[in-house]
Length: 259
Image: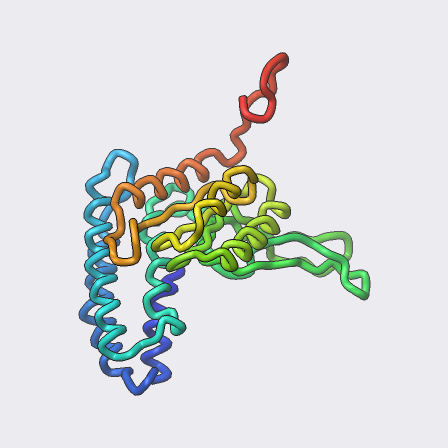
């Protein structure tokens, strides 16, 4: 598993960020680890909404303490001290999915396959992109006489943002388009803390196929994370994983693209 928020905390302890290593270490031991242990005890299934409610309560309580700690010790948002926790939420939510638990699929956030190209020496070069959260499969391939290479083929990729403005939205769509072009049956999503994007951008996004869905966890910046949205997000990703390779039969006459 990739615990990006834990890695952020440990890095700040190691480098003695703003001479606050001792305080961050105490926060890690006394606040972060108890939260993580409590969430990892929960079992997330479609028939157990109570686990999502309890997890959301833990998420909200921890995020409040994280925000208070950041303000008290002047930890900037640029350090991703708080935002990496939103990225880590997905690791907890999808730990119980059968393909992940059985190691058929894994969780990644770097080096996701985004295509192939020929370089100046006529060698095959793999194009890769980093994302905030990806469920996929690592495979090793060999093309002709080229050196074998590892590819991380995405099934689901998620960009996680504290908020999303128009510029960031354009970057997310561009990245998602590259991933989908390289892996046509993959699905791409956005998970954001709160909406900071004009409605017309959302309406326009509904008309293209770059993103499968956008989930907003809060009504506004100061609102708590919504348990129902957490559950809907889990249902969507679980459904995407379950439908790998399941294609509807093509029957004529009738609708072909959305039967």
